[in-house]
Length: 249
Ligand code: IPE
Ligand code: IPE
Ligand code: MG
Image (cartoon, rainbow, N blue to C red; front, side, top):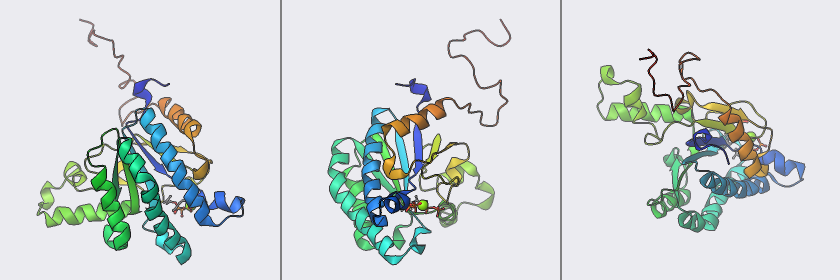
């Protein structure tokens, strides 16, 4: 197992490649999405076992409404059946579930399922699983601005810290590691504000094939990264056991 400091506190994943996984098996695309739910459940467990505290996954984007109607309705039904199948396990296993995205745009049944997930798991602390559903990074920034205006924040007082407080994941640290499966090298309007300093990792693995070994490969790549946050290369790696000051006194 890797050194604890090399494990990201917050992992964000674009779960892409379900359709291609199904196509390769001559199955309908929704079968790929269904397999993707099982891959997510395995990933949640693997993340919890490795001490990751926050896992945020992209399940349905604001742009995914542009897909054929039968795929969209299949995805909505799958959301309901996934909750029915896995919510009890998540609740028992200490996972807190939160849903982010535009709730006004989803059906009442799906909205109720989201609320049930949040309500039943609200006391859990082992892993915070945030599911982005009907979510877009640009939507998130716009809704944060709107709420800041509605709260009466004066323009001259609105700074990065203040606006962060209105983003939909305000109480969650920014992702340390951003993973996208499925081979595409793009962000596709997932977290935009929050990934300013995330490490990015792209893999050709299709999401339904993502497993603990794939996760460990991403974590190994992450642990080899040198995160500088804009500092000079020398400034960051202060040895943890160094007690002498840089002036040598
Ligand atoms: C990601 O898989 C899941 C959703 C967008 C809901 P895709 O459905 O995009 O799979 P590919 O990219 O077509 O293979
Ligand atoms: C991003 O994947 C959205 C989700 C995984 C939910 P897409 O498949 O929708 O992204 P594009 O269309 O390839 O950019
Ligand atoms: Mg895709």
